[in-house]
Length: 198
Ligand SMILES: [Zn+2]
Image 1 (cartoon, helix red, strand yellow):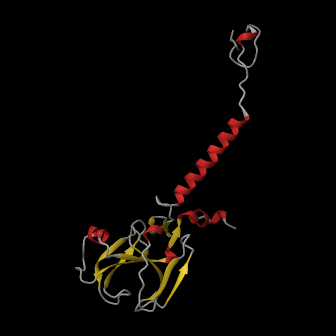
Image 2 (image 1 turned 90 degrees about the horizontal axis):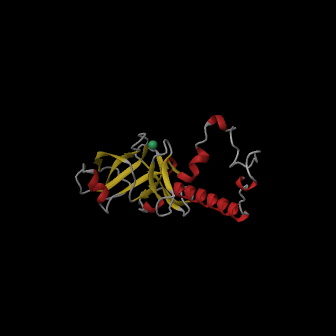
Image 3 (image 1 turned 180 degrees about the vertical axis):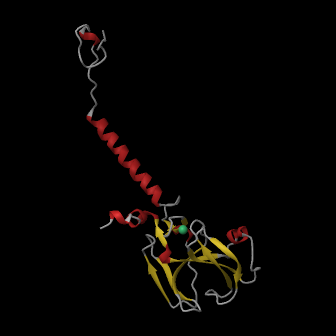
C-alpha cells in the first residue's frame, strides 16, 4: 500500500500530525523575486549592448562582428573632406562624420577611430591619401571580409609593418565607413528575418 504521507492529500492511514502543511509564500518574497528577475534581465541586456566602459559596441553591418566601440573614437580631420557633420545614429554622443571622395569619384562617409578589429592589407599606399602625412591600407572585416574602411600609418614608416606595430602605435588610426557599421543595441531590430517582417 502506497502511503500518501508527505503530500497534502490526507490518506486514511496517516495521523493528522504527519500531514505536511501546504507551504505558504509571503507576498513580499514574490515581489523580491520579480524585482531580481527584472534587474538581472536589464543588466544582461545592457552588458550585451555596451562595451566594458559603457560605450556602444559597433558591429560589422554584414555579419555582426564586433569592430570597435564609441570609446575608441579619435576625430582626425581631413583637409580634403567635402563636408563635416555630427551624426548620432551610431552613438549616444554625436560622432564626427566626414565625407571624402576617392580619385574614382566614389564618396564615403567616414568616422575615425584610434583602434578597431579590422584586417589590414599591406603594403600601404602613400598616394592619394585623405590625411597628408599618412599612408593607407584597405581595412576589412576579419570575419566576413566586407570592406569597412582604411587604416592610416605615418608616411615615413615602411609600407609593410607588423600588425603589432600598427596596433601599439599612438600615431595610427582607422577611418571606417559609417554605413557599414551598426550599433549592437539596434542590431536585433534591424536583423529581423525577412519572413517576420511585413
Ligand atoms: Zn563582417
